[in-house]
Amino acid sequence: MSLQKGQKLKLDSSTVAADITVRCTLKAPFHIDVSCFGLDANGKLSDEAYMVFYNQTASPKEEIRLLADVPDSQFMVQLARLPARIDKLVFTAAIDPAHSQTMRELGRLEFRLGEHVFALSGLDFSGEKAIMVAELYRKDGDWRLGVNGQGFNGGLDALLVHFGGAVAPAGATATPAAAAPARVSLEKRFEQQAPQLVSLAKIAGVSLAKNQLERVRAKVAFVLDASGSMYGQYDSGQVQEVVNRVFPLGVHFDDDEELETWAFALKSKQLSNVTFGNFKNYVKKDKGGWQQWMSDLNAGYNNEPAVIRDVITHFSGLTPPAVVTEKKGIFSSKKVFPEGFAPAIAAKAPVFVLFISDGGVSHNDEIQFLIRWASTLPIFWQFIGIGGSSYGALEKLDDLSGRHIDNANFFAIDDLRQISEAELYDRMMQEFPAWLKQARARDIIGNYEL
Image 1 (cartoon, rainbow, N blue to C red):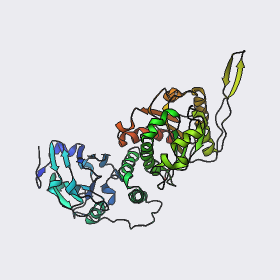
Image 2: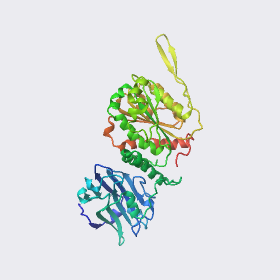
Image 3: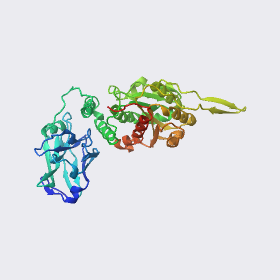
Image 4: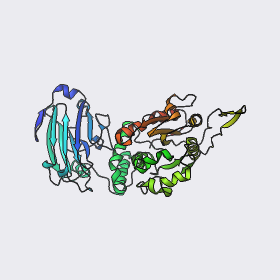
């Protein structure tokens, strides 16, 4: 049923008792934040834990949860579980006030609750930066839905102040316990230093929250295949796009906001860390750029073990044992792999390695040996195949036997442009949370949360 601006209706008891899905779908040539404010009887945000948005994706008892972010934001709401002090839920859409766009440029906004649909477009606005889209509110003991589409001149911060919340002053130092302000501060860093990555940073934050990883601190490493078969992907900008997409996720984890990075072909080479200062055009500029990497590393060959060994040594201080080749007769030989695992090390901080490859893997036995040997170390390996084939041992990591714990995962994507950021981040996080718990239980890592 299509609703008109200003319309109000009473929700039936079965709807109130059920889990309600509220959707807000946006079409706009710029980023818009969708949020839910839980207000008291005076229309104020008396408890900021009931502001649910990209950076705080659930209320204290998950009565309100952000399941998916823009452009198709979805909130799960359990009205019957809300505390009595929460009298109203207001759903809003806001543009960052630092950006030049206004709601006049909005293509379409569609709010949906069950069969009820409320639609707005840029024709409904002029210079506003935010919209109070709709609200669920208590009246005479019943829950009701009201749709208003009221424009608001400020952005999200102005809405927060309007509802009685507090905006942290610029440059304020967060206390260790203030996890949410610390994340807001990180979002501000993206707005100031990498505005083109703001939407990715928010989507990454939602994915981490969904997997209960928003408080995790880990070192993040990035490994890039620089073999000759990757030429087209570097030349077309796809590898730079990988950097752009991975950087926001890595920065959410990493305390120093830098991703330690390697390139490999026949040989391995550590590059500069990816940072806010150099992520843009990183693959074209760092250490002479990707064509220089290929020249330096002998791009005619793949040698994954070389870079795996370098990463292990860098983060653990250990040198993995060499593989011995024994002759078997005149014309044949056999590789002999040492038994056992890496010894325990003092460092307990988890390391999350994102390893990009287009396949052509040939050193299968040695890759399996190194991943197995390193399964006692605080390193998790997330291998990602992009636009290639013949991934060999990487495709069989889930079935790799003889490990201390499962310390690696693999998935492949034919074309990075055909997968959304939300899906990409969710797939990256598929096995990392389980590894964290198991590694903690085995005393491989220490306390990895804030």
